[in-house]
Length: 469
Image (cartoon, rainbow, N blue to C red; front, side, top):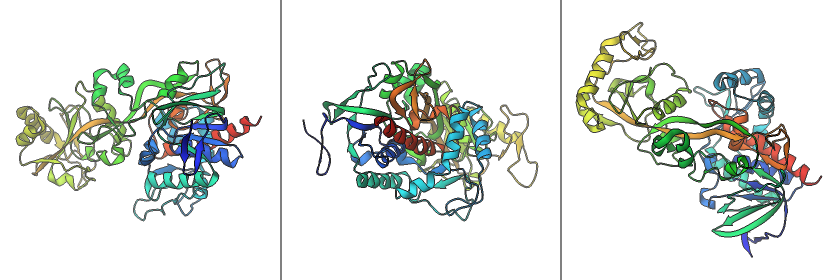
């Protein structure tokens, strides 16, 4: 059987590779690069066609990086202790401290690793520069292209449109992987395997086990092929799970966006500056409770838990200038009743909701940021701006799934752990499939790509070393 791996090269399924990496995102790419630089023969399996390679990495923007001094990419400093405190705060201590501190320490090397692979980092922005993250020049797709050029120079074999539906283990050892390459069945031998195939965030049937029919209405921000086949295969073979089954990181996204692969551009930004109502036209949470970056995840989860998982962010013309608009134009109307009709809501209920809110607004200072409501349930504790200036604007909201909090346990060498606590003999993991070891709840901007890069490099090096033992 002959399958073309890349121009001028032919994949030979009878040839066992030192390292086979399953997954073509940042974790998989960093793993094969590290493996090849360690002298191992390496094959990467990318489930998507070449044109859509990289999965959710295509939507990446930045990397969270610890640094003790300013550099050309990030201003000021961000210490290891501060990184750790941020992580504990958002996870509620749902993190493995040993692995988290390993990630934090290694994150200081990530931008240099990327630079050696041709990835360009943006110079710090003049306005509101981030001191905790480094931004990718050209975004995730530019990073992917640079990493792929490095794999080509290193002589990595890559199979596109290559699905590994399962990873059979024999007493904790993987010997070969069954594959479907362009729909053709084959197998590949492997001395070691790195699973970097992501979680199950796009598997609606899997999500429905926990969310019921509500999951049918979830938007998937990443790739549609994040079905979790390898994750399911490993968990069925005595591999230790980590994370909370059924829980997902979700943000509020524009309901008019695509079902899959919407990325960051469909995220809604204006929630704190207006009100949010559910399908019954009533408010259900304090829109001012969180006005920082974490508000996105709060509202994704809140909408997901409504009986009908849709909501509407509503503001007036005065508030509209205070936030970045959606990629889609707002639904506009000259009156609240007219707006209700366009949204499919009961006009009398929405008018009553807005009137009660407006009557409860209490200005505290000339600065509208601390304005709050009184006598309104739920209260709004910040940015309680009355809706009074037409046109009135609305954005329909759905939960947008970023990733799922379920994966496989790993040790400091990125080796997959079995339920008895022993490591699998030759299986390693990196990226989203093991991210819950570090971030089992919540999120920090840029940490996903950092986890992929750091543990991808660790897994690749350790797999190469193990293959030659």
